[in-house]
Image (cartoon, rainbow, N blue to C red; front, top):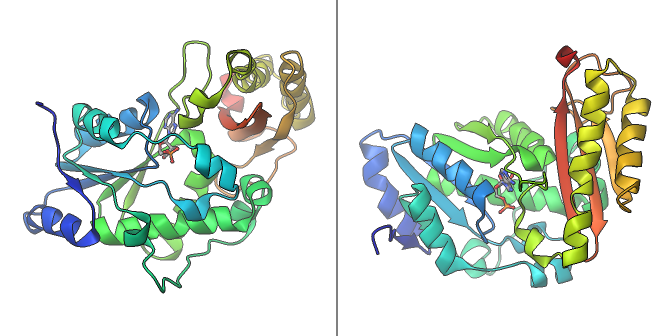
Length: 289
Ligand code: AMP
């Protein structure tokens, strides 16, 4: 097959494959994923392809960031297809280690990003271990691959804020590139979990996007009160029979709530749709009216 790319299973194998590129001062891009690749992931790989000499995508379903065993159990797995899709999108290599490789016997180190950005919203609902798990695996991937640029999706906005904190606080020599959320034609943000939605739930799932869009439309008419914007989003979601798990207007970096839209702020939402927990967000910019 024309796009067949190598798969490294261990840190040693990966370092060996990357060594010549590091030596030749080639720029290396890393796209971390948990697999079951969709157009969202592929957009990150394509962006990396445009910007870097060598692109590695990692596929690792990281157990330490799952707070719910059933969620981990149900999470879709499709490694063979992932390697094919990653190659087609322009990756040069896939790093797909086993859980044993990443967390060998005796593993006892954890990276904890603490404070408001990690402890609110996703951090509060999923528990502190979630972002500890994210920070630890991302730090490990950065150490193993030593990428110049790492690509993340805006869809997981709080994850981006936590990783920004990690990079600044630990002086990590990597640039973060955040790519826009890729959506279905009706606005539902692509997610590996979407395949688990029943047909009826798939229809309701658009409610997150509809809620965000309702608030954005109010911003365009001049509304600046967070309470009013949140109310509009909540009502639009309720009309589709969806109740939010959280809905908040926050500063994009600190994730502190804002009362009035004076600077661009993130409207973030999570909702349980049937068996599936979905998140989404939109940047609301007061300069848009
Ligand atoms: P995941 O496999 O869900 O951990 O996602 C891997 C990366 O892809 C993360 O940086 C996500 O934010 C990003 N991503 C997931 N869904 C989308 C999407 N719909 N659009 C853009 N990026 C996404």
